[in-house]
Amino acid sequence: MKDARDVIVRPIVSEKSYNLLEANVYTFEVAKSASKPEIRDAVEAIFDVNVLQVNTLNRNGKRSRNRRTGVWGKRPDVKRAYITLAEGDSIELFEA
Image 1 (cartoon, helix red, strand yellow):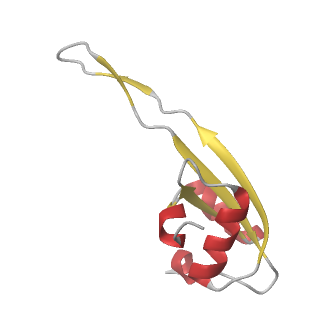
Image 2 (image 1 turned 90 degrees about the vertical axis):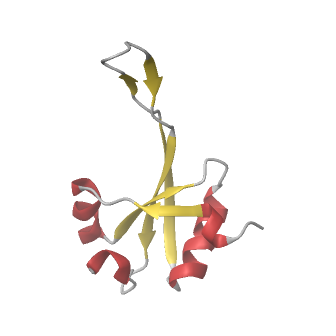
């Protein structure tokens, strides 16, 4: 099994993620190779909570152009995980 800190990269802080907090759903960026059971185990190990559901989403990076040289580049692809916690559980990282 992978180390829990290698599976969870960082929390996602956005307007959509804050709106999902009301439904007890938390958003994290995870490793591209992480599976749903690995993500579940990592969140439970790091934050000591009970996970009900894990939904994952692969997002393609946007194309970007350097205006001076005209060269096209690409932002990195990321994988997100939407974690639904049990009633009464919360992660204090987002309330701070």
